[in-house]
Length: 488
Image (cartoon, rainbow, N blue to C red; front, side, top):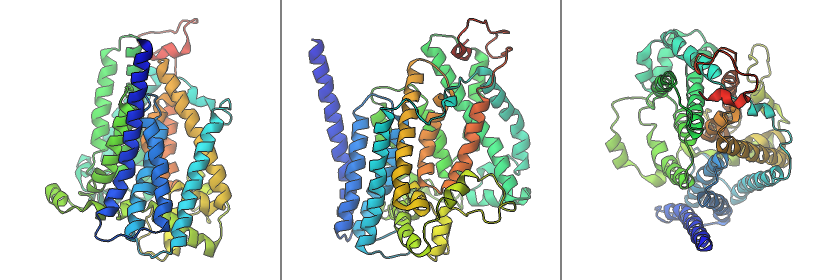
């Protein structure tokens, strides 16, 4: 009887995997086939290989009940930005920005992406045979109620002053362009604007995810969570949604918040499938529409939907990752590799430009200027970052390391959730799962600058003292395991 159940479950898993793969492969084919004109070339075939590769990986995840939040969003990014949209752009020979390309240029760009994917998979295999080599074990440090309360309450208490410093609560309900202008009139420099904005939104969001993780772990251990903790979560949630509303907040920031809250929730049998299906639809259909109120509030959503041509949306600037990667090849041929300059600029983002005269600009801007674009605020996928700094060698080594890191963190996260532990990794993994779309799309210098305060406040959430106002215990017994600090 048990054997029959296992066979039935295997059939169900195989069926989900097969059906998901077929649908994912069919979607870009459908868009290309229904376009007014299309031309299937060798470039279409090579980009089609990316579609098949990423579809197979997503289908495997969809058919599995194993929690793989970081790998899920990695392959979703590849499928949407390098697979689906790139296939449509190459097939109808229409790209977001000005430029015409030879087939061999498009094939080489596809090869860069595929080498990165193969290297990513190789890094994951190496992670399965090593003992967490090179990954900071400090990520396993326990998050405490004291630390989360410290960050969360401090964020709530300081919010009124920081909101006023940015111009008042009304600016958070202005279109993004108007909000930027209003805030610029209140603060003296862009650096101050960034610091105040980060201090306002980041600790609120980070402490919310950590607080929810603690609540879930407590319920898993059948430990009662006090009313004060529930009120803290409630107020953090309201404040986070207010400060990260889709009217005045960049789309990737809103997406990071929403996806982090989804990924931190308990994982179920169908969670992988729901995440993949929902995010493909969200990125292809909803993501372009969420820019509706960028400049004005009186725009009509129903009119925009009625006028929307999905194929035309897939060749807009939101989906320029493949074209930027293609542009990178010709720019590097003329200017040479930067030999680590761009990545070092990202890692040392915190050094002011007046201290570092030769500090690199973002890679997206660097490429755009050398292509002669007037609009230079472009993305720069991680593939382009690696290729600009070190060519094929850095693509290979960089994605081996990235695949190793993602697999290790994914596994750590799954084990921490399974055993009811709340560690830095327990909050960082769901946050980075949502943030990974921005991280992979780039540019790296802005992505790292936004990620750093998230990690910083997670470390603060791991602080502890003997007096914990949120657990109600004045002293921790000497024989109490450290991870029990997370529950009442």
